[in-house]
Image (tube, rainbow, N blue to C red; front, side, top):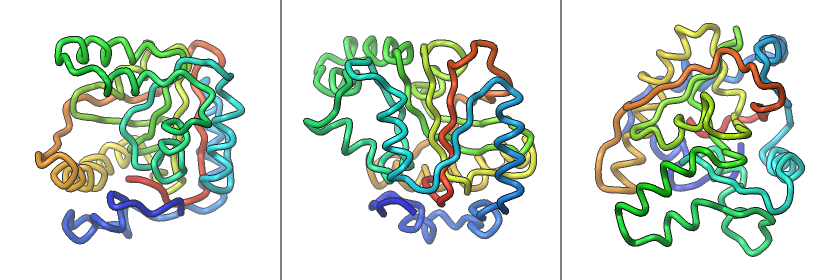
Length: 223
């Protein structure tokens, strides 16, 4: 897996009391290949890579220098080194998240957050991927999933293969029974307040060619 962080799943499992054997298994090579095939049939580009380091390099290749970028909160992005890179002096992109954090006026900050979902490139984690090709993401406020359906010019989703489940029904159950309990523990530790599932998006088909790309990593990452 990628770099272990204080909020990686391994450090939250005991408190969250989730069934990691059921919801965090590594699929077979055949299952991954079938998933990739079905995702591509839905108009979504899918790129399979070996590890998080390669995924980060792929992001650098996909996003041109000077591009406007925004990312949703994602343990996977932290674990592959994206957050460290985008916050470093090495980054080649215009990071909208920095402007949001730097704004002290709450109303102005809220406005910047709304605008950020229309970023030229929005980078996001994911909660579950069905072998049939649907991709599912939920969050509390909508600051991540708001970019998914249409708002962002380009959406790049980054996920470990551990998010793959047999069907869309399984994907929705994974959100409630695994991803949410872990995120709730993370939120209480990070912010001192619980989380909740407020907004969900199911990406089932994409009509704009080249708009959505999934980078699928052969590792267990995030939750």
